[in-house]
Image (cartoon, rainbow, N blue to C red; front, side):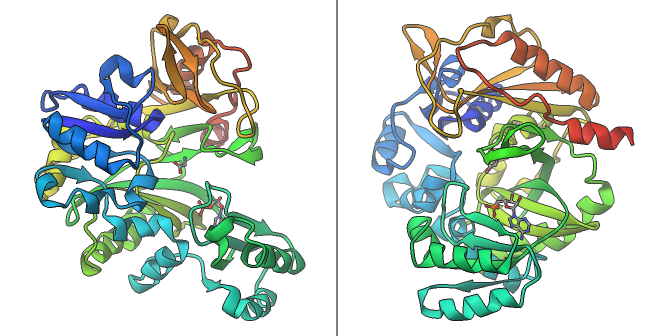
Length: 428
Ligand code: AMP
Ligand code: GLY
């Protein structure tokens, strides 16, 4: 079967890497892709939400499966678009527009969790009509108070306010002054969850599911989790504090009711669910759903899965995941993201990247890279990720950082403390 992967980041390179190992995958295309995907697949210059061009390309190239990486095309309704008659034979791995609202609207997702008894932080949503009530509600809350823009705000829409005064002034800024544009026309005022964060990933065919390996990511730009938020500077899987007891609770209290909820609410939900969780004194509470895999979490989750990914996707399409057995390795995977100097604020592009060919062990997943006259150059903030896999976190870290040390370009930056918190937990 011919397959089209939508997206251009490290996540999509990892999908392409795994799919390219499958005998069930004939021709593999990535739209728009990067310099890494160009080595193992055919890049196609089509934007992620240009459904018309994607559809024409699929028909011309006999593509029967579309694997969607980022959330934007899902929220924009790629699955619904591909339901039209001439495209019905093409399966889209990802949820429909209604399912994607679980990521597109935090209010929708909170209400979904409440309807299906999924444990989460207590919260209420306010807008311009009832902002006064919101200000009063803040006064009743324990500190800190969490404010969340309802819509997609490029990962910036969550504020943790240390005082009631700050929370009130931010609530006004979000609703009245449109601090995050339309995304903050509705704002959730939420209880603060005190715990350790991790993410659990699920692959579902809408009826059956697999809980995939969990991961922890490192969101801040600076060492020891300081500075601005980024898309993610590294990730580790497995996560040492997620023991079997905790993961069983996640499956029973979160995953099972979530997947059952998709069916009850008539969502056409296939593909991945990325569940952001807080471990609060051993109890899981959901912070958010994303309707896709994480980036850079994919770069540590997929290397731990031994199944043929195409075989799993075909079972998703046929709603027969229950006939498969998920096989994962006990190995630890660590990925370290290398970014352009200045990221996540302004940064340069077009710098030559050297040393990639010297990496003999470990996996290199490209993100913001492109080919300029056969040279690999930087083309984005997060440029590439190096994944190390080994028995135990130390071995995986050694392999990942040995790879990172070989790669050079002007202004390259990476965090040197990925996984150190988990290593310290292990040693205590
Ligand atoms: P989100 O955009 O929902 O992923 O939130 C961004 C980050 O804010 C999360 O990864 C958490 O670190 C933090 N966060 C969100 N909601 C809460 C909460 N209720 N309590 C504590 N931290 C939170
Ligand atoms: N690494 C976080 C995300 O993919 O949203």
